[in-house]
Length: 238
Picture 1 (cartoon, rainbow, N blue to C red):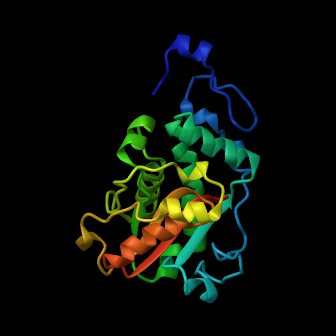
Picture 2: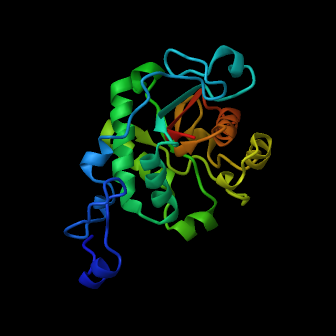
Picture 3: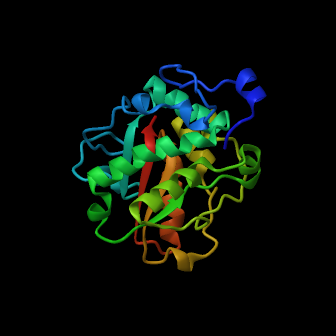
């Protein structure tokens, strides 16, 4: 949507990478095409929990004994300054338009890695939910925005609302200790309609994964309610 002239003067839109100012106030200019293309993607796959190399995105056999999550893919690293700035603006500066270029990173990676073929069964995309108060404060769930773009571009079914977060606790981003993150994520999520996920292959969608506690807890709930396989796909690994 075109912003008004006064807003363009007071709050000009500049690319988060090259700082070029938007000529027409289009929010998509927060990340220009040239800067988006500079974001590197992972060339090798690794286990989310121990970083051991894996062939297809699977959780390694040693970690699989303790974790319900079956697969994990991330496009890039959260430590790259442009990735960090973009995700921060998407989540905390309420620049919803940044969901489109971030989703393009997911789409390209999904297609290049042939994730659907890796899973063998047609997956359902399930965005990691926010508590309703957090979603109301932000006006959108960033995981839902990414999942909607990805579902449309890859012709993959979206099961929005298959997971909910009825309990409110501090955001994981505010907690640095891995043990505290696991405790904070425990029993946060619910699957209100088990029939939607029963015997299904699920791919969780989120923006960032750090320790994997949130994704693992989501996978545990989904498997307890009948999901067959649960993977996770995020923009960046923290």
